[in-house]
Image (cartoon, rainbow, N blue to C red):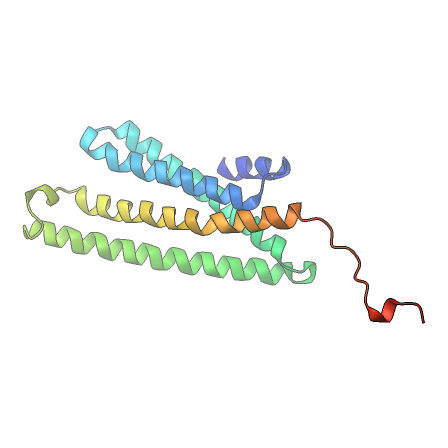
Length: 171
């Protein structure tokens, strides 16, 4: 569904970087919903959060892929898509491993009572990872901001006049 929404946004002329940023914003809300689901004991909020995570991921993926494809020469679009896919897969692999390791370390420390009573619950390790994810999504938004500004400046820049130099003077 998120891929279809992203496609529709792009068909209507949305900036791909803004689509990616919308995905990051949806992700921030989604991770927040999942974090709050535990203390509120709300399975519905958890489900909404997990669905929204997928939606944010879809918007981000389509936005970044479209932006990257727009940067390349038409003759190397396949190479650009391959490079984007490699970066995505590698990033996902590292982030899943790092998140899993962090979750396990926090859980082990919590079970041993090394983090205090408040940090010993079963949802705490996940909450730590999700808070980190929210922070990283804010970093992504901060990174995307200048890209939107530079794309807007290029789009709004007047066409450069033809250069007139010494060689163009009548002889």
